[in-house]
Image 1 (cartoon, rainbow, N blue to C red):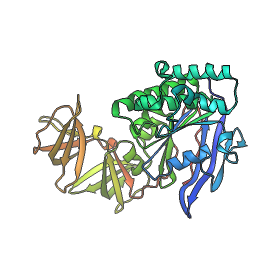
Image 2: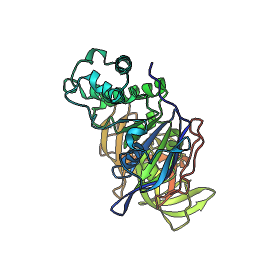
Image 3: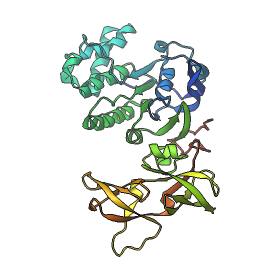
Image 4: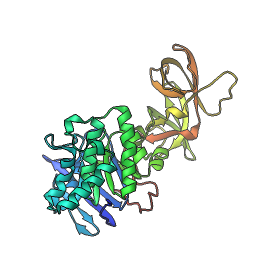
Length: 380
């Protein structure tokens, strides 16, 4: 039976990588505990793939160090680290069958033939590709090829599995299926996984902890629910589904709440960070927290009026875009469709409206208790 090699902790201390004098990754401090699933989240160019390649040994560090149970591994070549890697492009050998692709790493380690055959059978069964074992990669679908790439990684019984946007080339249904498969394998094999993605839904569904990056620097580390409910900056909020990020000016601050001017209206929200009257700010509101005021409703919170511009059918709910008088687009979800062109009043409770400083740099970068692992402060 395939089980992952174990370690207690993997530490990244002040890890950085520069290209031509420009920092692609700077000051990354993170402790990964055995069995954790860590997602590195951010847009293209934020440093997440650079961090993964530094871990894998595909890029040397410019500064910092990586330790596994107190022993430095950043000085080792990639093949000596014992990590498994799953690439976005699958990176399968096109002239080798599924079996031979999965066996390749074991053969390079010169393991006995009988052990190689047994482990290959187990790995192929884990990803449910037994009937395709004799096929070439070109005869498989994209999802099947990705399963082969995962089998090839886990057959080595790696202490750490590194995944670089492995689902980005798949269609929506396959991505959903493979997300479930990756999580199942992670749990059943006792893997420790570091996963790179730009998709917040993917990160929320898979990870025990998220690391949000921006311009090579960590913005926040925490559990999915901690980052979802308490983003440390408007930049993190944007990645955590607060689709309405609005520029504003602070009018007043009282007891942790701020009244701000947004377009032609005033809203009240919960302050995250530090703001004062006269400051520029950003207001963040989830589409789920905006609702249309129906006839006879009592408004208990902020309200503003706009014109319905777009209605999209999403099954049991509708995605609605409303244009405020100043041209700002607001996005919400509604159980029934308002008419395009209709004037509607929207409301949101003050506790569900977040007010952030204009600067996206958070005062606190680490939140959430993790999964039994101690959290580590992140210097940014």
